[in-house]
Structure formats: C-alpha cells, structure tokens
Length: 371
Image (cartoon, rainbow, N blue to C red):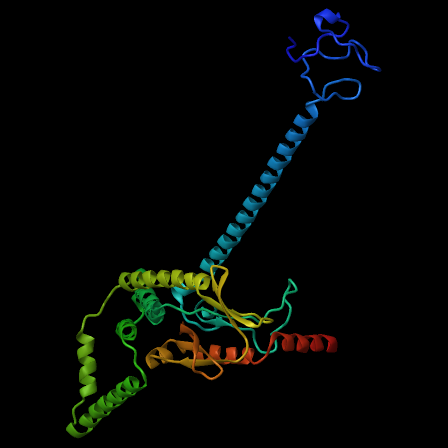
C-alpha cells in the first residue's frame, strides 16, 4: 500500500512509480513531500525563510518601539522630577529670608508669605522669554505665621547679647538698659503670640480689649495725679529688679527653630496651596504640586474679605480670610483662610473678574498697535 508519499521519479510501475507530467522533469519531484502539498513554480517546495524573516523583523520592530517609548517616558519623568527639584531648591533658597526676617513686605518675604502682583503700568508687559507677566499669585499661610515677630525680635536680642559677649571692650558694649528692654519686648511678643494663636479677637472682643486697656491706663494716671504716688515709676523699678537675662543662646535657638519651621511651612504652602489668576486667563486656579485641582471660572462672582481676629489683622499685615460667592452672595463656592493682605487680594480679584480674557486681549492688541 502507498504510505502517502510520492516515490522517486523514473521508478517502475510495480514499485508504484508515477509518470512525470508534461513540463516536469523526472528528478525535480522531492522525496517525502506530502500528497496535496503546493509546489512553487518549477516544482520547488515553499520557502519558510521568508516567514521567519518577517516574524523576526516584526519582533525587532516591536521591541524597538517599546524601547523608544520607555526611553521617552523615562526622559519625561527625569525632566519632570528635575524641574520639581529645581523649583523646590529655588523656593528653599529664596525662603532663607523667612528664617531671619519673616516680614511680608516688598524686598523681604512678601512673595513667600503673602501675594505677588505686577506694579501698576507693568501688567501685560513681556519678559525676556517673550511671555506676558501680570499673574496674581497668593499663598495662604498656616497659623505658625503668627510667630513672625517672635522670630525677628529673638534674633535681635540674641545678636545684641552675643555682641556684648564677644567684645571685650566695655566701652563698646550695648547698655544693659537696651538689652533689658529688648528682652522685655521679646517676652511681650511671645505672650501676645500665644494669645493670638489661642484666641480670636472679633470685633466685640477686640473692642472690649481696647476699652479695658484704655480704662486701666487712665485709672493709673488718675491715681498718680490724685494720690501723688508715682505708681508707674514704682512698677518700672520693680520690673527692673526682675531677672530676665537670657543670654544669647536661648533667643537664638528659639528664633532658629521657629524660623526654619516657618521656611519649611511657607515652601510647602507655595507647592501645595497656591492660588493664581493668570494675566490672560478666565480662571482662578488652585495649584497642588503643579496640578490644578480647583478652578473657578470668571463671571458672576463676588469676593468677600473678613478678619476673624482683629489682633491678627493689625499685627500680621492684614491676616484674614476670603470667601468666593456667587453674584447674589448666597452660595459660597470656596473659602480661603490665612491670607496675608486679604483686603488687597480680594480687591485685586474683583478687578480681574470684572474683565474677561477676550476684552483684555483686545485692549493689549490696541496698545501694541498704538506703539
């Protein structure tokens, strides 16, 4: 019986040989080729090397594509990480002033602790990179900002005391009355800071505090006049007898710890809790590690500033809150707490929300054409 294979051409009929067809040579039919297998022109079996080459090329291309995408992703991740690290280092270096003089005024720590906006007449001007400036940015602060006066006064006390400690010439020393007065001022700042961090003096409480203080001072002055007793002088003499000498170590250590803590806190707030209205932008955006997690669109909005504690308002450069409400003022959209200069920030937001991005762009184009 036949085993399903074509025998060698040229065999005898007894051995099951087959006669080659027209155009086929007797020796071109391969041995062992399955019946029904397709032959290439000329009677050759199909070439499997082409299929293997195609599969190899496809695998190589896929591997190259995956490798390119992985390289691009790693490059983008490295650029993103590098940019964030550069920004973090820049914020920390810029925040060094907060360690020594955490006062939110121009030239010191206003950008780190309060808000930044372009000066009048410079809004919309292009910088060296050709980009328009004019963005309003403000950073809410943590309650730790209430220690700002303790920090800089502590450095002053420590510097004065250390100066007297290092200088041998008594004639060049600061007088004891100056050092003693600075120490009492620092103690007073500490007590007032503790009160501010623990209590909120609203309008009624603040009015009561002022009234009690005025009545107490007038009562003392009146008692001196009527009783002919120098009460104030006696109190001053008694205070001088109290030993409040701290040396230079205590105020410097306290100010250093609080200053570094405030620098870290302000840097964290700039990364995690910054609000911005771009020069040409129809949104008030909240930035959380370069991600916009809250967007308030321009339109019918009203901004209400308030001061829960009037002591903080006057001692912490307008420390207060801003509420974002709808046009009728009934629905609160967002509440922003701990804003230094809340009055100025609120008014600036009102001005910017009165003008849309399209109107602003038209005005700027007209100004450029006029130039």
